[in-house]
Length: 297
Image (cartoon, rainbow, N blue to C red; front, side, top):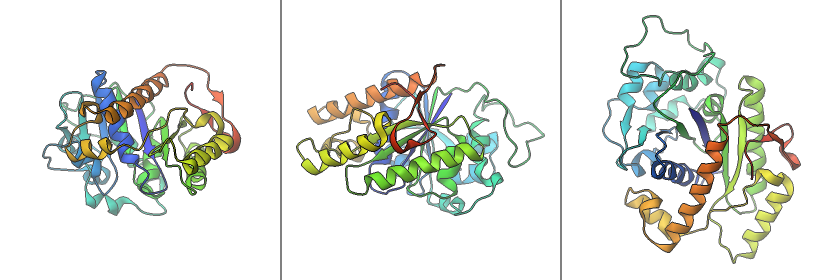
């Protein structure tokens, strides 16, 4: 199981769009996927047309047991291969600005219990904050965590649970500072207790090909962060909003713009899945510091 956190510390860049597009690509290619909607806005839950549940991710963070997980996970309306750990506005109560180790470890503990959810919980649960030495086999090959656009307990807990961080930005004047803060957050969680966390890379969203300002900002990102910025970018297409409004994956929206966007997500999925294979990590470039490239460009 590979856990990928889609993150941005700047709102409105299309972070949820990227999580949904990646899940849609996984579905097309038969990769069983769980989307964890950690954003209190719960937009991913709505777009995935999640079925009814008696619990949400907020309850899982209250009590990260198999029993609560079973009540909070439901099939998406997209069909087979994509399930949802549903989000809720109540998740905001877990977004403390300065959480302790016990709070930060709750999502990791929950994901470690995804294996065989039909089994009853063990009588003796691990104490809150206890580390899980190995993650058991699970019914999911890919877990995608949609993080909120802030660096509180929710995002930090997602990074503590993740194997890879997919950083999303848009080509604006604030892109560089936002990406740098996101990289700093990844490095901080590596040092705090998740040394296996690596940045998958930076995906630039909502790009207008003939916009000179966008071209300038993308060049600026690549100059500073080098190969950590994906060569493929997501074009700004109305098909994305149309598909989300219809609660359908972009892969099923049959327009030229949708096919263009879908092709980027197919490439991204391939890169994501390759990170699950053993390989030597290349060194990062620019201002990424001690972080390394988690996949080939």
